[in-house]
Image 1: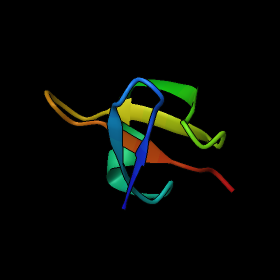
Image 2: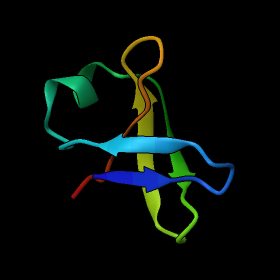
Image 3: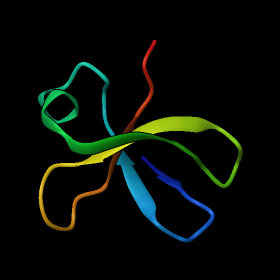
Length: 54
């Protein structure tokens, strides 16, 4: 599954408890095109990840 930001970036959705979510860099809150707020981050060049905390 992916979610998109209004600027066209697509983020791959992962579980908030996953290793990638725990180790992500550049973590921040971001409001997507549909108005939902996700936590996003990266795990290396070209990766764009999103997850929602409970």
